[in-house]
Structure formats: structure tokens, C-alpha cells
Length: 131
Image 1 (cartoon, rainbow, N blue to C red):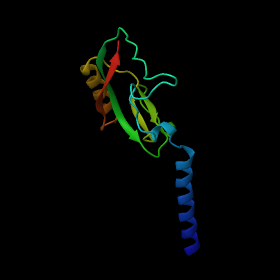
Image 2 (image 1 turned 30 degrees about the vertical axis):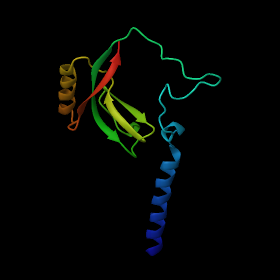
Image 3 (image 1 turned 120 degrees about the horizontal axis):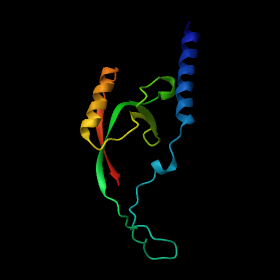
Image 4 (image 1 turned 120 degrees about the vertical axis):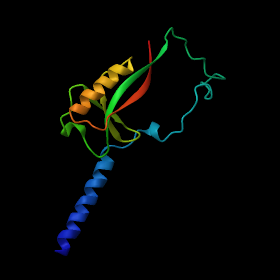
């Protein structure tokens, strides 16, 4: 019985280590962020200024229903309006609405629909889009 317990613990430790090794973090997750004008261009003194575009920032909304750690979203069926997106630095899957909404009322309507479908812990996130 003692050997069986030891074998199960070793198997669990190996499985956990194998999951961590299977999805290593990208190198940019470990590097400190660098501002654009701070780093010089090879052969030049400073970085060129950023290009200007004729866009306007607008606030949009998404409905987030889950953040999955140590779970593959392919194992579960989700509502057709949802998509899972992987964040490599945090090593989590974010399950959120496929569409972003300009009006908060539309996001609240989807949130209500998802709550009726069983996604009780959903919340609305803000994002900046450019038009």
C-alpha cells in the first residue's frame, strides 16, 4: 500500500512538471519593457518618431466569462458567441465574447443572455479600439 501511494505521488508530480514544460513562457515575458524612444537604432542616435495615423480611439466592451489555468478549453463546449484566447505570459486561457460592442447596453444584453445560459460569473471588460 505504501508503494502504491508513493507511485501515485510520483506520477502526479511528473504530470504537473510535464504540463509546465509543455507550454514554456515566450522570451518577451521575462524581458523588461522598453520605451520606444529610449532604445537607439543601430547606426543612429535615437529611434524615429512613431508614424501618425488618422484614427480615433474609441471605448468598446467585451464580456468575459472565465479565466482558465491548467485547463484546456478544447475539453469543454462553450456558447457559440464565446472564444478562448491564450495569454502566454500569464499562462491562462481567457474565455470571452467573440464580438466587441461599442454600446455598453449591447454588452449587458449579451451578459444577461450568457447568465441565463449558465455563465453566472461573467463581467464586462473595457478596451480601446481605433477607427
